Image (cartoon, rainbow, N blue to C red):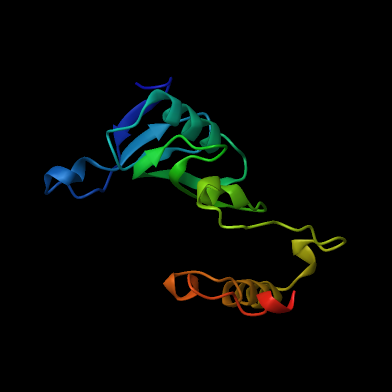
Amino acid sequence: RHAGCVWRLCRGFNSASAASKFPVKIETKGKPIHLYTDDVDANTTRQLVNLAQNEFVVSHVAAMPDVHLGKGATIGSVFATRDAVCPNAVGVDIGCGMCALPVENLKRHQLSGGELVRIQRGIKDNTPTGFDYHDKAPRGANET
């Protein structure tokens, strides 16, 4: 037990090596946490539990070996969402400059699956990521 949660090894994980004790599954009142380290402090665990208890989290919250307390979002945590966008989940300490903008009078159910895929591709294709963008401005940035 830690921070009021029950920890147990996840079923089906290969136990052939010493590293196979992971992931550790932490049950919460919401979604479970899959922890890939045994070095996590109580405040970080509490922050992970708070995240896992949000209704927008899908399936589980994964906590990587570098997990640590963050400002609002736990650094080293990974989770999927449904019907929600969490820009600060990447970590406010990296200065990525992400922002979320509301699209007035447009709801997901108004779009077809193909339209959603085209929007996602457009966002992905126009979001600067990786080492190719460290030394130059993103496409179109100088025009804005």
